[in-house]
Image (cartoon, rainbow, N blue to C red; front, side, top):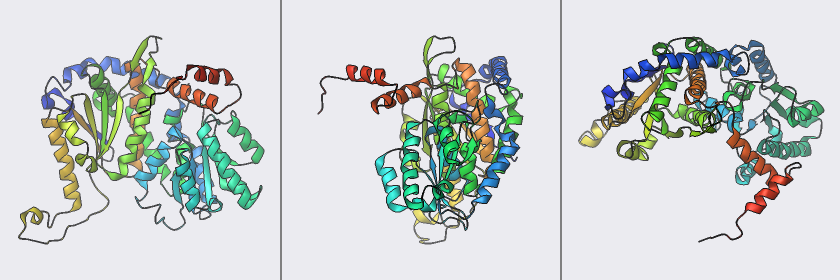
Length: 463
């Protein structure tokens, strides 16, 4: 099979017992509810959920490839200036579809990629200590155009570019992805004449990876974005109307809801048994947390819904987290990302035939050991009655990664319907942004600053 598949066997009560697993009857009872939830999401795709049609926007894809071809070989570095949904997808695609050592030894004609998704001065300052902005293309990403972190980085690097290259020449080192007509960043694009791309209406940050937000940086470093988009389109077509038993996105949404609402498992662990897929777990953590973690339901009632996403990497975290997972509280369920066929064969030579603790490895391959470690974790979790499912990639390539991105986006959208929350707003994030604006002295936020200062403790207890 050339698509990713979902194996739910070890989440069922037949594998982990009725106290921890879900039954086929419970899933069957959800068929009608799940179908209605999917229909509600699909009905909005041409209205306000335009992220669902991103895989089909051929003109946009061609424009991205045309631009990246025009700058090929000109820059040693590409730096993404963005945060949250403007960064996590870029990192996930680069980690999955470039060499793990791409940024140490880029292929000829391709730049290194750095995603500076924080304003920690030690991060940004270290980058400036080691790299030359004049050899760099800066990809500035903000849908609203006013994200404080992104705009501060833009001001910093623009200043360095102007200082090194001048007002005119610096413009070739900046490409912007933002709203088509609104926001400060769009106004700056119009003033400066920067090359720019659009984040369409109806595409929130955490659902934007298949827009120019994720495609521009990926194409610049040589990732097959057409393959990613083809995979996403194939998964979208599969999941549009298929019933629960044939629809991996729908099934995953139902399992997540059942695990938390019926089985009291509030923690969702994505355990990546692929070094290259590890950053997909980070991307999914934002998608799940920001979409489903809500104080209010769509009916206005206080609900405080949402699972807590946790990320782990196999086999690394077998030696740091699995003890808790196998013997700790029954408050977690697990998704293992596994890969059927690795790209590399790494055979182990024979040595020390008289030492049994070494000899058994001789003649095998690192892939054999990696697979055995993954299966060992699956067995240990299942025998300890910890429900787990597997998302199986035939191999890590552009098409399978695109399928995963689309599957999880559709699944989380359906989860919003099942949980009864708005999966597409983020009031908690906005509250933090407003507080930051106030503390930085932004005009129009004086009253909020006064509130914060008035509520600050008059005395702190520090030990």
